[in-house]
Length: 183
Image 1 (cartoon, rainbow, N blue to C red):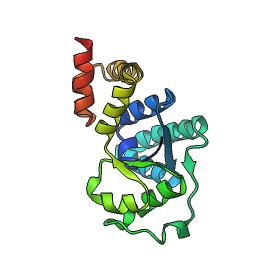
Image 2: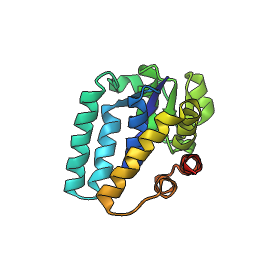
Image 3: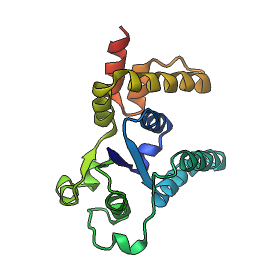
Image 4: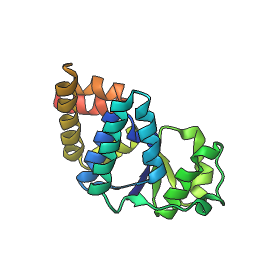
């Protein structure tokens, strides 16, 4: 399954680390465009120059690791599309050009299901998407989430439980499922 990742699921860090980690396990093929990655970098820049530089470094690593995931999009390829927010049309165009099966986003209202269906696309939310992947391969998803939890604990100095970390990362159902799996 090919899934185009919207900028809002690439930034924040925990969600991105889990999504990319699960892709690394072969559970799906991630896609993005240069503009989507630039939106991530600009969002990180709001935290300061150091945050932007970290994001740009991570983007370079992502592109090197996943060279076939970047959808090359020309401006004219967006011309035939419509969405409620014109600033999101490039996301839809990249999904179509990249032959994606779905767009993964937190912005449901900006990607109406009917419009996406006309293009043969589904709209997925990260929590539901990761839950579906967890149902299909619990160990792959739980291993990645635990690795991310350990890294978050190391970097923040906080003793995160999986449920609290994933709730903060807007993945509450996955956090609850993984917590229940541990007990």
